[in-house]
Length: 223
Ligand code: DX5
Ligand code: ZN
Image (cartoon, rainbow, N blue to C red):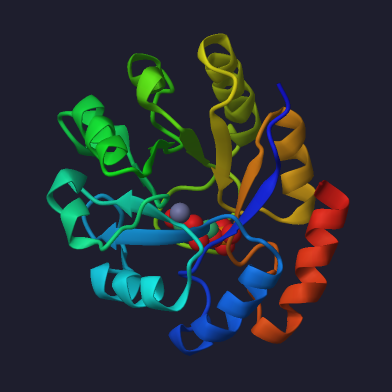
């Protein structure tokens, strides 16, 4: 089964005042989903994007948004985001006592449901929830910051996750999040990733004026 490859830009990287410009580029280039990092200072040692920025963004674009929750007890916060049908919500399974229930809840909101696996998190978490999963995001850096380098087990883990997903349900998307340079992304694609969260590494979000150049370069080499 060949899944479509796609780019999903990480909106924690641009400046807030650049958002409107970027949205035009994202729309012109049929970006299917925007990546939105939420950090609570507990699960990860950083605090990032909250509900008000999310709700503002929903007012300036129709593109679905993938809320990547890097928070403890994500179930407490989901209702604060004004999600629409077709948005994506993902969380780290070890941050909640009831990951299965939470996936069901997300799907009942007409959103796509995903689990995110950190470098030290066993992929066996995916097995018991597989019938609820629309996608998996594999962290290829430790969650918390943009601009880090790939963890050593990243490529091998992509392969293992893809194999696991294929044995249950081959249409589950596999996204990679962290240090997606062109060079790394080529290897990640070969290992089985089809969705690429692009933060600072690919330079696609360096500046709204250079979006086109770096996006075209990335996709022409990769897709
Ligand atoms: C990090 C975030 C990423 C981040 C990736 O915890 O989840 O989405 O934006 O940024 P780069 O591409 O710089 O590694
Ligand atoms: Zn992320």
